[in-house]
Every structure is written in structure tokens, then in C-alpha cells.
Image (cartoon, rainbow over all chains, first blue to last red; front, side, top):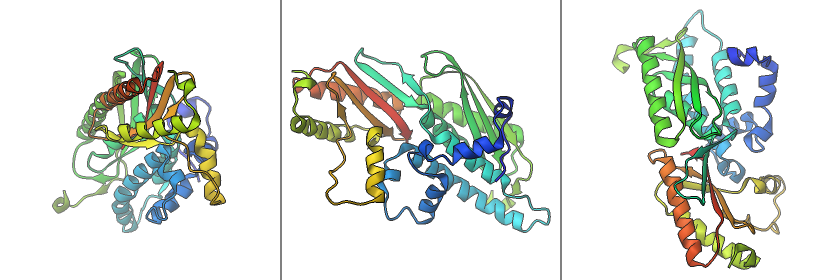
Amino acid sequence: MTTDLPDDLEAAGVSGDDVETLSLEPDRLDGHTIDELADYLDAGMTPADPTIDDSPACQNVLDALTRVRMLSHGALEADALDEDAREDDWITEIITNISLEAHAGRDIPLPPLKETENSVITEGAVRSIVRRAGDTVDGVLIGRCTLEGDVTTPGAPVVVRVWARIVRDHGATAEAVTDAVCSAVEEALRTHTEMNVESIDVTIRTDGAAPVPEEER
Amino acid sequence: MTSHDLDDTARDALALELEELVEAIPGVAHIYQPRATLPALLAARLTPDPSTPPPPPRVEIGDDGVVALTIATDADSISPDVAHRVHDALLERLGRAGTAVRRVDVRIARVD
């Protein structure tokens, strides 16, 4: 498996092999690998496995995998009819990132109303919120998202970076899709966090999007 | 009374009561097992043993007066508000039980 890395990881000296190793490291997914979770999904999540069902990281991965499968299915069908079919590297890349981002990460404080209150939302939960919000935009899958800044300090400025891909082309311009992803992510973050979001930077890839017939739009 | 004064049975009973209380709070989708119990859960899955005790309560009441739990919130809720409600409900219930609380740690690990 090869992995195309976002520029920030490459700049940090992280190799594709490193990312692959990290994404397959069971400790990052509460004792499970991404392959095990994919198999569990294939089996209809039966018999129930409490070590998966009771793991927020695993549940976040299962949610994201489900959305990737639903949306990529149509795109791969279109590829199959295309003589210049793309390889499914982009799916591999997205799945790798899903497993990288699902672990809990940093604790992001929710400002208390009383002195006995110490509430946080995990970075993994927030990344999952961002991913889900972006995936709600027609034809779009979020490839990767990062929270940059000291999210553990209340009020510290945070930059949210999102890399997304148009998988199925519904006819909207890249600019319109970018705006839609940005709005969806902004609303989700405003609802579920109290981070001081300075900006949401969305990068959209449009190459190879499978066209959606007019009658299906 | 402090949580230090509770014996294990009373502590577990109170923790289970708190679980039910939290599960009934609007916006709470799930309460997770404490992460420390994960190795035991994994071991039980690999080598099932009927004599294995049931997992501990999902609301931890520490000797130091810290009550901790990890939850998922509903996607259509407002997560910070849910956290406030959980804190207030636990504080009120523990106050009625005469148990001193120094801090309530609510960790949202997933939005469902």
C-alpha cells in the first residue's frame, strides 16, 4: 500500500511507510486494526463485539468507513467503465487517514459554568465531526482534517484544515463545493465545541470525479 | 461523607445509579467503559471465561472526590450543553447522597 501524504506531514519528515504503520497500529484504535473493523462492517457488525461497540475510536472509524463505501461504490462503478480508470489509491489514502484521525488525541476543554466542572471533547471526536459534516455535502468525501493550534488552551486560536475530494460530480463548481464544505464544518464545530476557530481552510480535489447523470442530481 | 468512606458495594451501587441518571439525560447517546478496563475486555473476547467478573461501572467515583465518565452525545444536541447537564445532574444526585464532590470530569469522545 502506498500513501500520498499531505504536505504538512511530508514537511515534518513523515514517510508514507510511517503513516501506514501508524494507521495499522492496534493501540490507536483501542486494540483493533482498520482491517478488523472493515471485516466487522462486512459482517453486519454481528456477532456484537463489545470491544468495538464500546470504543468511540472504533465507532468513529466504522461511521467514516460506511460513508466512504457508500459514496465510493458509485465512483468505482464509473471507473470500471472507464478505459483510463484510476486506481483506488485515493480510497486507500482516505481510509488510512480515517484510522489516523480516529484516536482520541488531545482533550479540548469546554468552558465550565461551575468550578467543579471539568468537561472536554476529544480531538478524535472533533475530527470525526468535521469529517461527517464535510461528507454530507453531495459527492464529497473528506480526505483528511487537522486542528492546528493549542486546542488544549481555552480561547487559543485554532486553524482547521480540511482536504476533501469530489468523488461524484453533481455539477457544482469547485468553489461552490468548497463553500458548502466550509459552511457545514463551521456549523458543526459551532454546535459541538467552543474552540476559537480562526479559520477553516478547505482544499478540494476535483480530478477524476465520476459524473452523476442529470436525472440523479 | 466523602467518596473515600464508601465501601466497594456502596460505591458500585451508587455508580450504577449515576449511570442510569446520565443515560436519561437528553443528548447523551452512550456511556463508555473507562479506558482502563479495555485490556480486560479484549482479553475476555480472546479467551471467554464464564468466571470473568462483569465490567466495572462506567461512572468512576474516585477516592479523591473526582467523578469521571466518558460519553457520546447525540449529533442533534449541543455537546457543551449536554456536558453541563451531566455535570449538574451528577453533582445534584451526589449531593443528595451526601457524597462530597471535588470535580466532575465529563469527556465527550464521540458525537453519535
